[in-house]
Image (cartoon, rainbow, N blue to C red; front, side):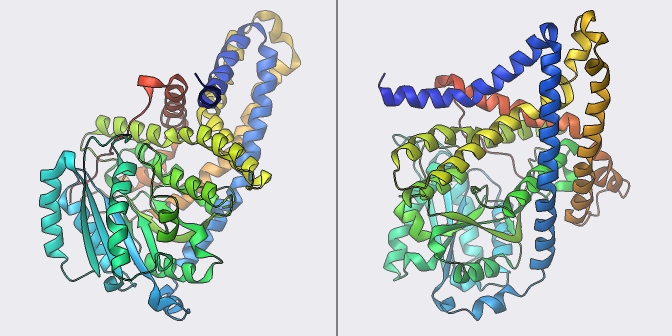
Length: 496
């Protein structure tokens, strides 16, 4: 094995190894050195309290900007900017077996927004492995939306191409290479084309593309930025199990903290970028699960650190996992979160590319690497340390340690720390109420109490089962490599 491969393998193992060392030592030392574990847990809980206290203002800032920006007439502002007439939008909608109603609803919301649909192009990107279903959907959709958009592209990604991982990234790569020459033939400059990569169930706020256009025309060097909106998972939130709702709100609030402090941020889920950048990096990588964050890193490396995320506080909405069965929905949620946690695959890529890049500033490299490893580590360990392993020494420690003052006082200290940290839960619960879509008529009124308040009682359980465990699963698979590596799984969507 070459030296380069050995180094890459080391950094593939490192995140998972740090997690398992922490968990194993926390259990083993609880029996033989419980005071060590107690000291560590106190420090960790203090760090977590600091983390919650630090992030909460950023959530509130994003919340205020969200409430402000969804009311503005962004189309008026965009039309007043020089260069408005040159801008076009290109929207990629990769799909496999989604129902025609899901695609129809997404396109309806795009077409009915404040930005003119005749200045937008749609790419419906299907898979050969579901060709018959896709072509029937594409045929119905293209007839229904004929003449609505400036251009409607339909691509079919062949199966079994070499060096590809079946999934969204390879589909987007194929579609991008098929569409880019046609965009050029239309006489459009890649610097004037804004690309949006959306999940096929993405429902855009009516002002989204107007806001995006305005930002693209006002930020410095717009082709050196991706554009990240707030992601709301509330299309079918009322029909989802409570654990699914809590997990999805948690994702939204995490993203809101990132948007108010975008230094070191990477793109997530549905987002936008310039066609110029995509051409420069040769489009999305074909062998990735986490293509949404990797495309940002490809640009960061290509431009030697001169690339960033511009926040958009006008939201897009997507589905929670939807199977029609309570327990199957929880399994689908677990798989979705494990797929998101598979973003750990970016870490060895970052180390390898950053090490070879002599032009990228040191602090850019350091900040992205630290944020990646710290985020993955706390994702996998914090719930277990806070709710389970932090209590273990008090259950299993030898009698000799129980007379120590720190042993007797620590439970009260930890309880006090967690009470302070719970402020974040109450703030999140309050904001989640305002983010809810209107209650559908078929949902009983009594369920409002469950959806708005009582579901948050499940937070500790959700934090562990749908937080730590899928992250540990993903990082362990990445550490073991080979046949344990994760493929791309498609989350079930609602029927249209």
